[in-house]
Image (cartoon, rainbow, N blue to C red):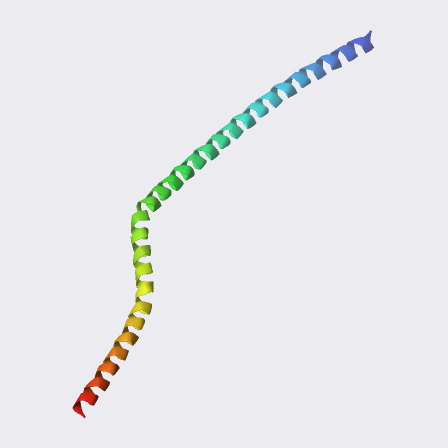
Length: 108
């Protein structure tokens, strides 16, 4: 009977240890879950802040679209002018050369 009592006592202690272990395990799992949910909430908040900042940057960029269009148009006009002025200058010198020739012929 002494053997039966010892095994019963050991079984009860294992049962108490196991339940204590399970209790501690549940506490730790709960703490980890809370920490994880807090960290996930923090990550979500930071992502939302980043998203709002990106939206603001996009809005500011869109406000400059008309200005960009105006400068682009100005650049295109200025890119065409040097070629046209060179052609016009060449035509103008040709006309002046012809005029000078006519003047010299008249003087003779």
